[in-house]
Length: 260
Image 1 (tube, rainbow, N blue to C red):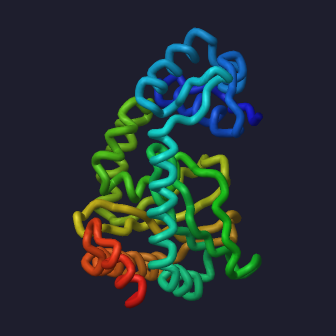
Image 2 (image 1 turned 60 degrees about the vertical axis):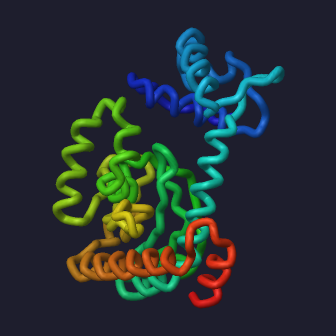
C-alpha cells in the first residue's frame, strides 16, 4: 500500500489523502491502515470517513473500507467521457504533436483531479505512446486550471483549498488569456500550457496541453498559436458531435460514430 506523503491542513486535502490510500489497493482497509497511510490521527480519519461514507464516496463493509458507489460512478463516467473525446479528437492531437514537436496531452476532470486519457510523447521518445499515468491535482496542472476556469461548478468544489482565493484569481487571468500554465513546483516535473475544449453549453469539458519534462522542451509563440488553433477546432468538433448525437439516443450515437 502506497503511503501518502505529507498532510494537508484542509478538509479536502485530508479527504484526498484518505481516498488515495483507499484507492491504492483493491482490498478493504481497516481504520488503522487508512490512518497510518494518510498520516492522520485515528479520530480525524474516523470523522472524515463518516462524512465520506454518508455521501457514498467511501463504503464500509465487514472487512473494512473501500471506494463507494458514487466515486466509482464518477470515475467510470470520467473514463467514458475521456474515451469518447479521445476517439473524437485524436486527429487534432496528432496534428498538434506534428506541428510543435512537443508532448501533447488530452485531459479530463474527475472531481479534484485531472486524468490524461491520451499523451503523445516527444520525438526523443516513441512518437505515439499512450500513457495514462497517475491523476494529478486539477488546481496544479495547466489542463486542470484550464477546465476549472470555465467550469464554475467544478471550481466551487475546491472551496476548502488553502490556496482557493489565489486559484480563483488565476482563473480570472486564464479567462482573459485563454491559456493556463502548470505550477512550477508540481512534483511530476511536467511543464506545460493548456487550452480548454468547450461543449455547446460553453462549459469546458476537457483541455489540450503542450509541454515537456525537460528544460529543452521550450514552448514558443508558434507552438502556443498552434495550441489555440487546435483547441478551437477541437471545440467545434465536440459541439458538432453533440448535435449529431441527441441526448439519450443510442441510434444518434451510432450514426455520429459512422459519420465521424
